[in-house]
Image 1: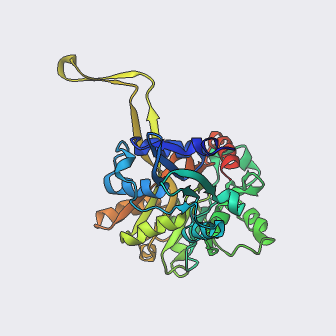
Image 2: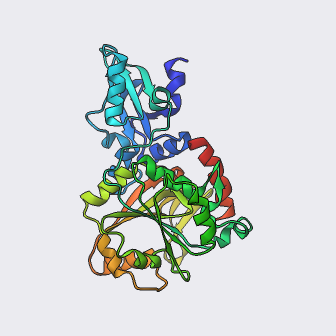
Image 3: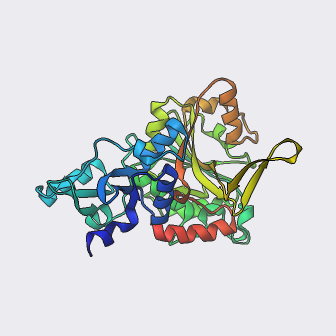
Length: 356
């Protein structure tokens, strides 16, 4: 396979937008693109570069050439292969460009080819707690959930909640706190013969919303912690989310998927008296969609009402009202997998098989 055939799907133009880069990453299930200006290698842009750019200026249409790093990790033709692979390991590089003496791109080493496993990102130190909200009835997943609880709905060869936990384990975390209610005994039975997972269970006597059961964990959790819905999976380096949360001193950080909607028609903006103000041809609008993954500081547990129905959005509003900090960390639409509804379940099964 020649170089062009090897990398053609990862090449993006120097003048493309950040949204173009996100779209291409989703299309090719990757998190790193190779930037060319005309026919010459220019740099790399990663999902982390795009996320940092969006967090600073929140403009999806900015050209990515404004956000390229000045220094990137590359190999060169004079280096032994073992030295280049060590560099990839040290920097957790999804791919490594190999340049000649004239800075021309002559080869690319891919993590998946060299190390024969999926690139999962940096390890997180400290085995911090992960709360999994697994108490819902899964009404929108019927008839599947007539038989099994939503957390145990299969994707591939495993229950979805097990896949969520494996994602955290890949980051070095195995400290799970699971809030259960509907068909709780089936969930506990499923994990009885899986000692590789460290799980503490908290039984809701009644449905308590997406955050109400946190009051049960006030005595158990005393450090920064993740919360995940049991029906979503984020294909993202979780250490990046944690770093953003800590560096910005957030009380709560919510992960949001960047979702773009296109209108397949020309639109008209009309002003007073029905006069045409502006024409737009097939416009697109981009939103941040709550993806169901969060990081919280432990002091927030004291703000959860006892034994009351309470959503995490209520907590966000409460934090904002008292002047606290709620951060929003963007991920691409393609990296957000959701099985909350039947149609989403079917599309997630397809996407999961291609990404994992």
